[in-house]
Each structure stands twice: as C-alpha cells, then as structure tokens.
Image (cartoon, rainbow, N blue to C red; front, side, top):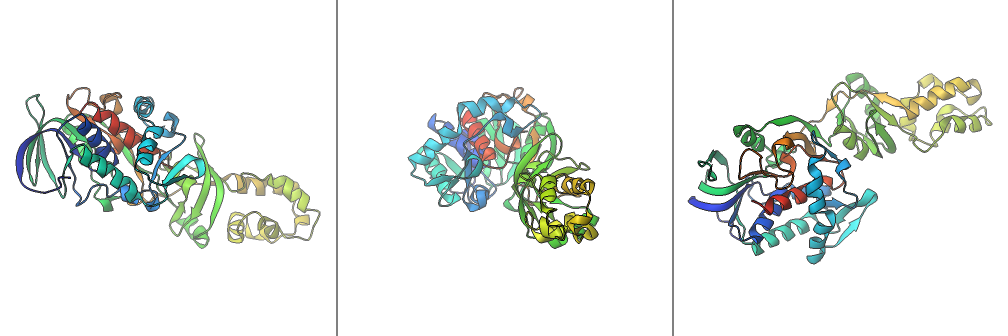
Length: 400
C-alpha cells in the first residue's frame, strides 16, 4: 500500500479527504472500478477515530437498521443508501475476513477482538484496490478546475482530480483532529449547512441539581428517558458532571437547550400498587421499601427526606401517587451537554437537499461528493452511524 509522503503535483481520478470509515469504504469501491484513488488525511495513520469506536471493540453495525433510526432535516435522504448497501452486505465482508463478532443487546454487532480488526480489513481491501494514501496532510486550498474537476493543494503538494469526495466527519471528539473543514468546503461551493450541535453526548446539570445529585456519582440504573417526542430505554449513569449512559446519550441527540426531559426510574413497576401492598407492614419506613427497587442513595435523593423517613401507615394514598409520579415521571432540565469534547457524533451538517441520495454528489457541483458524518444524517447509538458511513461511502464509490 502506497503511504509515502512526498511533494507531488499530479493528476488523480479521485481524491478523498478523510481516511475514516466512510472515506475508506468509498476508496475501496472507487478503486475496484479501476479509478486512481488518493486518500488524504490529517492524521499520521488512517482510521484513528474508528479504532476508538465501541470502546475499542467496534460496534460496526446493527441488525435493525432503519431510516427511522436517523435524524435529518430530510428524513428520506438516507433510505436509498441504506437499502443499496445494507448491514448484511458489510457483514459479508466481516465474515470473508474471518473476523469474530457477536450480537449484543438491541441488535448491536461488535468485534470479539478489537476495532483494529475492522480497520485492517478495510486497509487490506484498499491495498487490493490499488488505493494510495497521503497521511499527516493538511488541506491548504481547493479550487474548481474550470468545470473539469478540482485542484487540491496540500502541505505535501498539489493534485488535480475529476472527483473530490469530502469524508471529513463532524466536530465530535476534537482530540482525534476533528475540524470544520468539510463544512468550509461545502460553504465554498455555496452549499448550505444545517445547524450543528453535539449528539450522543452526556448532559450536564443546573447548579442546584448538580449539588443535590453529586452524591449519586457512579450509580447506574435501567430507566426510560423521554422528551415528549422520543423515548429511549436503557441504563442511565449519574456522573460527577451530570447524566450519561445509553438512554441519556440517545436522548441528547433530540434535545434542545432549555428543554426538560422526563426519567422513569421504575419502568416495570406499578409503584402505587406496591406501596399499598407494603402497607400491610405499617411500621416499615418508605425509604426501606424504595431501597428494594432503587439504589438507596438514589431513592433518598428523589423523595423528600422527611417523607423517606416516614412509616407507611402515616402516608396517604394521595401521597403514594405523588411518590410514584416522582419516581416514574422525574422531570429535570439539563444545564447543557458536555459538548463536542465527549460527543460521539455531530447532529446537523451538509444540507441533504443539495446532495443526490443515489450518488452522494452535490446537485449543483458535478464531481463533488459528501459522505458520512459531514452530511446532515445522524444515527442512534448502537452501530447506526458506522452503517451510514459504510452505506454512503459505498454509494459514492460507485460514481466518484
């Protein structure tokens, strides 16, 4: 595989900016069409963010991929790509390379080894397809070449290409080198950007709530988190900064500043009925009963202290309902999110109405393609974003 960094001025059929999941998939497919492909990336090695996914185990796709699992101002845009290159198509490649994997909850597929297994598979396919790489590279300027392609100037030389593919990702995890480059390229060619915000990201709390709930740091429980439009069930984790865990991360992609969220801490329990039954033991204190369903610290934090110490016989049925509502409809207004530093994705991006859903090519700029996270398509937690990378990259690779 050619990965030498030297100053060049030459012509390529396809230049792909970004050696992440979508860029590598596009490179493989374009290379298989005998296109002369160069992938350029700011990092010293391809696929650096990919190595971090799934806690290092790479949640590479999901068994239940559906357009409803994605957020976009154009909710129909992702349907074509997801149907033409499916999770089962990617799984065939995984099996072909004898990568051991397993299915976890909610259809998530993970490597049994590490994320490097998937990266090595992609790099092997790139090598077979004759793809070249230019790493540790900085894009200095891009110019349209009189309607016949593009001139891409880097700190390692200038290149001319017929097709330019932007696979730069979003703003999430800046420690991996995330930058607004893809959005800047879009704007240069008068393509609009849908509003950007961090997604799949922990919530921070208002100062008052943070002080009250700080003692819960480390506690994790099964819950349902909702906001009136969406609802997610999964574990939530109390941290020293706020709230995290899968259900919270999912909700964050649908949350706007100033909005409340509702947390059902007992999704499988009719608390009113349980308290009435427990009233057969009138001297039992409320906190003792609640401790059977929730961690003690959490139960005490969600119910008024004087009430928690009260024997059941002193608590009316009306108060039982208040207690149940408090635990099953706990309303909290996040102070914000932890931002792009810990966000797994960027919500928003290149306007999908300006891009062909079949080819990923800009409608008004022939030869310019956008794929992966840089587009205004954001998936749920659980392998959905990587599947979008594979699907959109595959589609662009058929035409770039």
